[in-house]
Image (cartoon, rainbow, N blue to C red; front, top):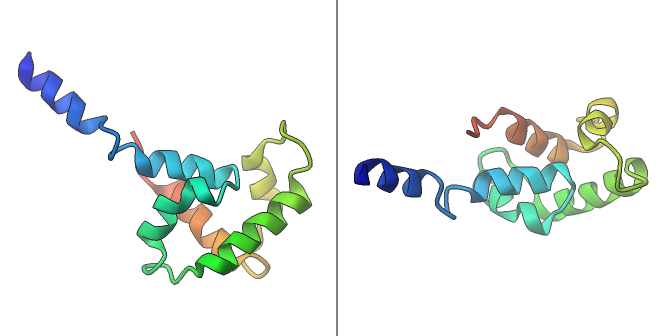
Length: 100
């Protein structure tokens, strides 16, 4: 029983929940909340943090007019790789992460 509890504490520790929490913040266009995910993958996917921050602000202001907007459907309909290359890349990363 102690082994199970120990493994559960490790699996669901604060550190292990940072990536999924950051991915959720990214999907809500919260730049500061998604910094852990951004910093983790920015070099691998050549993401420019300054450009990403601006892209997130423009996308959010252009397509998410109220708090009740379903961000996934808005992203699916409006996110273009040509217009928002950094945001597009990070959204792809967030969507393919095996978070359990």
